[in-house]
Image (tube, rainbow, N blue to C red; front, side, top):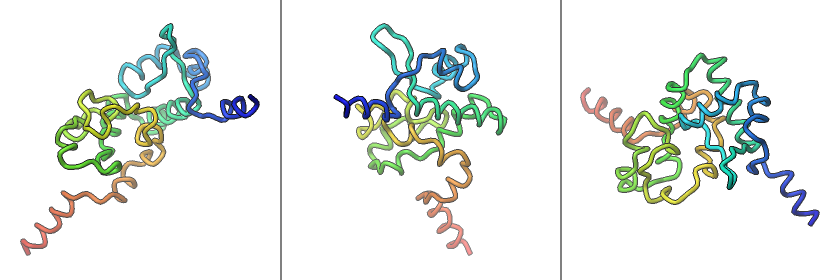
Length: 165
């Protein structure tokens, strides 16, 4: 019993904050949190009575979103497009067939956790538990993140340029 209590206290994914408490924690209105949810930037859990509940990880995600808005000057649409650039298909090693059947690969305006048509690898998964959704800190500076990625099409372009010389 004590072990379960301790486990629950240490579970950063456990939804424990209501929408009003979450809004107070990051100093925004409840309406703002609903707007973030409607745009797909946050996926709060829902109780059986449909109340929104937020975990500590959700609060960190919301702080990241606020930082992007307040410090970087981005709006919600810009954040969505920026997050849609995360090459989830490379990170989770999707097959070429899976990529072609997934809107996250073909749609440049929606992050992978928002798209309705997902590849086989992600189709039945809860995106809240995926590291691409849950850990945005590597993407805070997208340019550094992209510099560290290897993209097949970039290598192909480099080869084409070499061959032109």
